[in-house]
Amino acid sequence: MTNQSVAVIGSGRIGRGWAIVFARAGFNVNVHDADSVMLSGAISAIRESVGDLNSYGLIDEPVETIVARVRACPDLVDAVRDVALVQENIGEVVEAKLALFAELDRLTAPDTLLASSTSGLPASAFTADLEGRARCLVGHPVNPPSLVPLVELCGAPWTSPETLTKARELYARAGQKPVTVNYEISGFLLNRIQGAVLDEVMSLYEQGFASAADLDSVMSDGLAMRWSFMGPFETIDLNAPGGLADYADRYGGTYRTIASERVPFSWEPDTIRKLHDERRAVLSKDDIEARSHWRDRRLMALLAHRRSLQTKDS
Image (cartoon, rainbow, N blue to C red; front, side, top):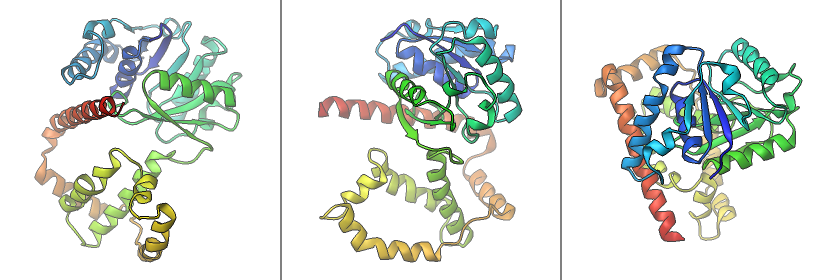
């Protein structure tokens, strides 16, 4: 537990998720949003989400103890005063991030880490001209960060090694699973891997090999069963008697053939429209929000199961 403070800028879904992450780890959290209406509803939404976590046994303190650590701050200056980290969660607009990070660089202490939750923009796109640019980085979460612990840390070319070390330690202390992206790359790691999977399933669908529902099942009832607790390298390491090199000897040729036959997907509008209609036949647009809440509860149940397994393994 720690009494350090962090600031969360932007009180949408990701910002609220970050507030929960830090508050349940003992940090005091100042939440700021330029939209006063959004900010006014942030604490009640956070309380509801923490209550859901409590129902699955995923917090170790009373709900109100955690929520009491979160403070709505209408004033940006007040929000970022004396904090160890600022976690920015505004829209994916370079100009907006340029303006905000200039303000953050001016208003915060020199040793405050300035992190962006951006999922696609490199830190170099909005920190180049800052006096304190060495302390800036991307801290890209998975939505929502309160349920999926991965956070990708990626600095600009001028981000100091000390910044990345401090950030990794801070996020780990908050209960997240930080990974370091060594160099700036579009989409960072998770979105590139997700993009490769999406590209293939979209292509397979477009070529008529399977329905959307069956391709979803290939993942949810197949690959994801193992990938929910081990990565692809460990998976193939265990799938051949001699380990990873043995797997490569056995199946490398097959994968080379697959790669040579692959048809990249061009995000053709007609295919997207067909896919969308197929999804709407299963789930109406009006039910998306409810299904999203169902997904979050399933993630909570999975987290609770993983926590119980970790207890048994220890």
